[in-house]
Length: 145
Ligand SMILES: [Zn+2]
Image (cartoon, rainbow, N blue to C red):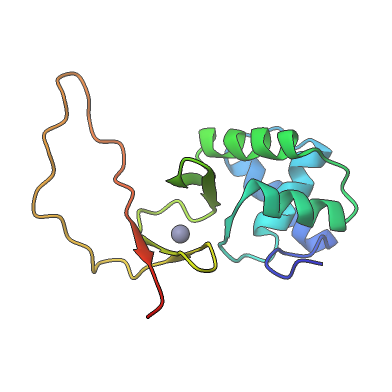
């Protein structure tokens, strides 16, 4: 049992269903289970596809890693989550979609929220013609000393 996810209770499934409905995502059984694990306890979390896959497996939801990936991407496309790419091999998915910076702990490979409002940009480049800045991802990499 992975305690970094919500438990698959009836309550969590209801919360997950409501979360999907908010973005008009069709609540298939697998999507509802994954949504419940992600937001069923009302907490925001940062997850990897592998972590969610293991949590789904241990809660008895038979789902493949590829399906978990596709579902997380679908949740991002629907605006329910944001994908944060830390490096070429590692993506995190955040249930908090408000603009906020992150810490990446290099030793534990954990992504956590950094205090919002304490990052300031004095200057951003002008976007190329015909483009606008959709989002600025800030990942501050930490090493313990
Ligand atoms: Zn976050």
